[in-house]
Image 1: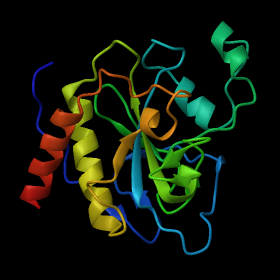
Image 2 (image 1 turned 60 degrees about the horizontal axis):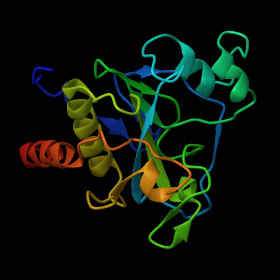
Image 3 (image 1 turned 120 degrees about the vertical axis):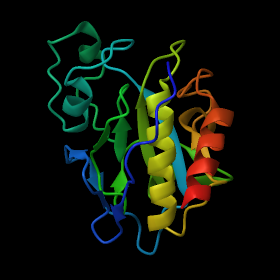
Length: 197
């Protein structure tokens, strides 16, 4: 994939927890964080629905609780699943927001980070549209770096050092964003974005 410029400057309103100028498909699958709990961790995920297929309405439908079980055999396996993420980055770099960043999305499940359990309480979850064995696009890396920089600016409780994969907080249970996610490339892009602020 050719290198593309980062998306336009991303701004997050800390009061509402919403990203200005991105597509929003607000999910009912969220609740409030425990009192006094701030986000201190960013969890990077990978997702495709059906597995290995990109595009289509299915991720939106899953996160809003109206995924039709009869539309694909795999959907029967996850029927009734109540999950969400704060945001998704599509293959073309488009960002879709599902849950305000100040609220608790249901993305990490049973999880632990540095000895602290229940990562949903204190984390922000960002999904990348992808699949095991398929490289992510440069547009996704640029969008993730820009979104991460905006999150760091909006939420001082977050740190560039506290970014983990779903596989890191739920080892043995989850493997995404899979070995194809290039952490070094992402961190270099993030450093460049932060240096330009």
